[in-house]
Amino acid sequence: VRDSIDAVNDDSWSVQLGDALLDQMKLYTGQRGFKKTLLSILGLVIQKTNLKEFIHRAVGELFEGTDHVSDIERLGCARGLGQAAAVNTDIVLTKLQSIVKAQEKKQSGGWFSSKPTGPSVTSGAKATALLTYGYVTMLTPTDLVTSRVEVHIVNNILPVLQAPATAEIKENGLRAIDLIGKAVHPDRLEKFVLKSRDELIKVILTIMNPPAEQNAKPD
Image (cartoon, rainbow, N blue to C red; front, side, top):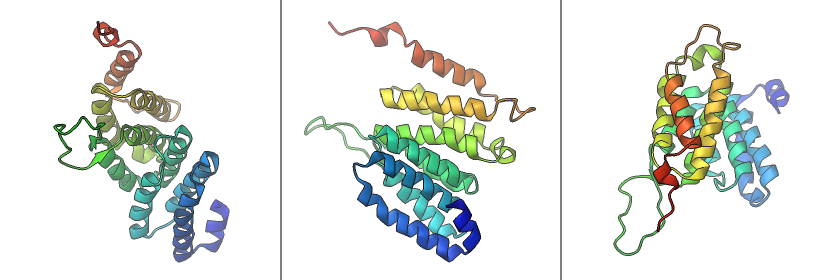
């Protein structure tokens, strides 16, 4: 796909290809493996396109077209948006921030349960956003990731993991931290120091060894 886009070298053609792939997403319902591949290819098309209107729209549709209950589709989405972020870093980060900062949808608690006062997302969508942060960090050019990882990535991940969270959020948060660690390892960024390292380690330890009261079973 990359070679084909480079050979054609025409933005309008790339946008038509991207729109065709977006239209195809609904045909892959229940076909997780094929959908994962489609999402990843979509991210590459976004990366190779310069038309901002399409990039904004496609980033949103790629994320929203993912079934966030599926770990397979979640991986395809994360990889796809990671590839898109290799060139369109800030557009992808803006989308992810809107997800992690949104209220989490709660199961209905009856007539008197409170309703969200703003945009809300599922815990599965937040889990996908966290994993995507990891791939964005891995695939963003090293000269750019150093100015983004602390403020725009780690600072958005930590509050989600420090609050009470579902198992899928914790799991994908840990996977994201692992990818971030690999992305900023001295083998790749020799002189870079991750100032939030201790906070991340503390979050990891808390998730792996939760306080005793959280493990206590109700009488």
